[in-house]
Amino acid sequence: MTSRTERLAVLQNSEFRFFLGIRFFLTIALQIQAVVVGWQVYRIMQDPLSLGLIGLAEAIPALSVALYAGHVADIKSKRMIMFRSVLVMLMCSLALSFFSNDDVVLGLGGSNSVRMMYLFIFISGFARGFYAPTGFAFLSQLVRREQLTTASTLNSSVWQIAAIIGPALGGWLFAWGGITTAFYVVLACTLVALALIGFIKPKPVPVLTHIEPIAHRLREGINYVLNNKVILSALSLDLFAVLFGGAVALLPVFADEILHVGAEGLGMLRAAPSLGASITMIVLSATRPIQSPGKTLLWCVGAFGICIIAFGISTSFYFSLCMLFLSGAFDSVSVVVRGNILQLETPDHMRGRVSAVNTMFIGSSNEIGAFESGLAARLLGTVTSVVFGGTMTLLVVAFTGIKSKALRVYRYPH
Image 1 (cartoon, one colour):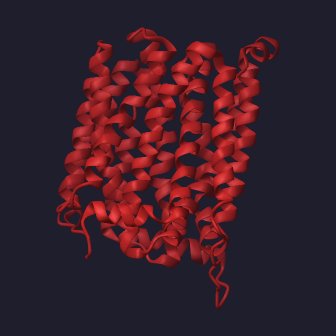
Image 2: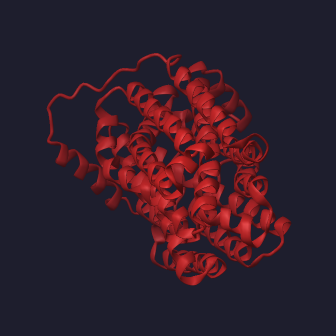
């Protein structure tokens, strides 16, 4: 089938459409929340490290439960795990809306309010640690195997579209309606995502013929990734690229002190990478699969690093937007390639555990990268830390390209 016919076929599946709706509304909610909480924390603390601590507060619980969450996703109802995870996120968003309110900040004091925000970000990290591998594994229960590549690309595209709308909407809401109005939208979108889960019918839960120890099952998932050179190389490449090259955590500093564009400009800066990614993914979904995915992955991650360096040294708001737009475009190719590799190379009975390892490599590296960015900004200065991160990304690409022949020559299986 052509790419267009494949997209139409998979979109005729109503449950897959509900799944995309969950991803869309939950992503908008989390993106708005990230913008307004980041801006509020920096406005109170005036310290780039405080932004890095937001990432660390989320990464620690997500990392601690990732492997166990993958094990649970392989043996329990994925639909129910998703429902409970989103419900916990909703409760945490409600608490964040309270403790980030300006009146509460004045009453408790800035430092105490920020500590409470860190606490509920920490709790939400557990929920997101369960949600990520479960969502990845659940996708294969909604579409046929031959539709996985198309479904995975559409899933990533929807995430990127929501990641464009969310930050821009968050910055606008904060600037014109205040933090309380922004959190009303966060709560509404999360409620919609929670309701959409109910429209998906329960799916069969795997029947285990014999009960293996949890430690054995977790080790099995780790060993599968470590022994698959293509998956390991792709995950490692993205791990270090995101760890060193992520500048998103420092965008409040750039918006406030370097580009002088305020909360509304911050929303535009956060939306720019996703806009580039979304347009690129639309193009990718309308064309034939990438013929040399391994080489393409290397080149695009390298280009991403160059864009981050250019963004770091920029003092022009519009040039910065352009560099972030291009960084998102190049990053989206690596997201699609890595997602397709994982979907096509992972056996059905191990999807949750392999996705959990992916979460440890990639998902939490966003938050650990945010902490690294905040710490580096305090030690080196904001601009120097971003340029350093982009340079390290280029070195990682060069090392991976030299050492990983399996990734360089990789082709998608038929």
